[in-house]
Amino acid sequence: MKLAHCCWPVLASMLPLLSVQAADIKSGSSTSKAMPSYSMMLIGGGASVCSSTEKSQCDATASFSENAKTGALFSVQAKYIDNIVNNEFWPATRKTTAQQVGALLKHLQNKLAGSEVTSRELSRLWRSSEAEYNGSWVSGRELYGSLSEAERNFVFDQLEVEVSERTSAANRKKEQVLPQNSKDTISLGLYQQFVSLATEVSGKRAPRILVVTASGRDPFAAVDYYVDLFKKLGADASWLPVNAAYQAAQRDSAGSAVGCQNYLQHLVQEQGSFQRGRVYPDLLAEQKDFCTKGSAQALEMIRRADAIFFNGGDQSLTYKAFKQPDGSDSKELAQIRTMLGKGELVLAGTSAGTAVMSGGSYLGADTVMISNGQSPQAIYQGAFAAKAPSPGCENNNSCGTGMDENSLTYQANGGLGLFPWGVLDTHFSERGRQGRLLTLVAHSKNTFGFGVDEATALLVGFDKKNPDFIRFSVSGAEGVYVAQRVAETTVEPSRIMAMQSHYFTNGDSFSLQQGQLLASFADWKYAPSTTSSPLLTSGNLFSGDNFRQLANLMCNNQSRTADGSFSVAGKEFKLQLRRDSQSAARSGQYHVGSINKNYCSYRNIQVSVAGN
Image (tube, rainbow, N blue to C red; front, top):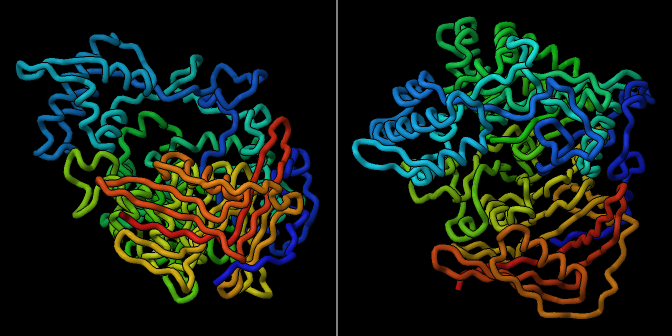
């Protein structure tokens, strides 16, 4: 199936990087309750604005209050060390490792003498230290590297302390956001665009935006950031404390009242997050109160909302927050699904908050949810319908049969099922994820896969009168890669032939109707004028954004093919991009403040990959 070119225009009301002032949002401009121009905004992650913990994102004029939190702090104390070493967290096979960790931490306790340090400083001191255990010296660097991610998280969680205001130890410092002082005006524009979409639903009043932090292993860590961000952009923002631990507490065999009281235990079991009550006492109190009121409180908050934003982290955690163990919708998700379909709610996600939206079915195939993997391993090993292995799983033999920590895994029954049109992937070009998306689309029999770059959004619009017609637009710094399985596509072990690919960038739009994809490039983009046809090649194709660079070179000249290679497990692979008569490319420049961006978009570029 070829992608056809049409003259469907970009909606004027949603031009890329729309700038919205807070005063305009509060006053509103319409009381219409018609379907918003776009009902979903799926960001690929990496959209950063100025905050007290990310001052590198701020301009020189940014100034925070004395009570702004600048980062997490850690303290190595004897009682914390005892709790680490003697905790049931460690299986019998890792007890010696636990004792070695304890010896090293005692060394750091003496060295720090009560001082509180950042995570980066604690990691540096750990790796540069040695400690004696059972008559032998233990290298801090080797010990640190031998821990799985879960083990490292456990240790650091036990050492983290509340960051309190100087004026009162009872008041926790909070992260503050200064969006108008952001260096990255493109990322800021995406958040402004989301608030503008929410305003299309709210009308004259400030839009009510709920922030969901369920993707975070620590569901409290991102609350301050997103609530303050959207408030500063003129919204009535609040936290919706629905997460995996909350749902587990509601299902507690002793009753929800007991489950909510024991919320921290569920947080450990469901999300692997420890000692959060010590670090965020106010948010824990809010979480427990919300939990005690149950789904009635959650549903009322959702009914009153105009938009919901889902944070990044781990999409499997958000799945557990909104799906029942049998895969059915929670009451909260059922309410969201109903309101989204009626045009009463705008949904946005970033990173894992985007990836979790996929699910349901399209064109006769179940839409799966990606959960892990790197491109070389995906093409070499194939795809596994299995739980994602955790980083460092090879250290404690927990990866799963035939897998390593970089294996491509997916959830066969999908995610939340709010985006059925294809697999969603994020942090896409920056991490060379083209190979894993091509592999998963081919192996899962899905027709489409959508890879969203960082600081970039895929906007999704619905039509009540024609539900089969779905509109898409791209906004932001980079682009959206679309992998398409066509009739000519063949899949064999370590071999994928004749997949179709497209790359849409800022200002481009396209639509889907019964499997046909129609596209329109932005009207400020033109056919590349370069007439040269160089031989294009790239080694180490999936390192960083090498794939995007190779494709961009091909997009900007008349070369008919571009070749790349990569190695995995001692085996060499070749990948080829090929133009044909249906291919097209457009390039152009876009100015945002002091930022001048060059874009090149293309459609119908064939992709084939095989091992030698």
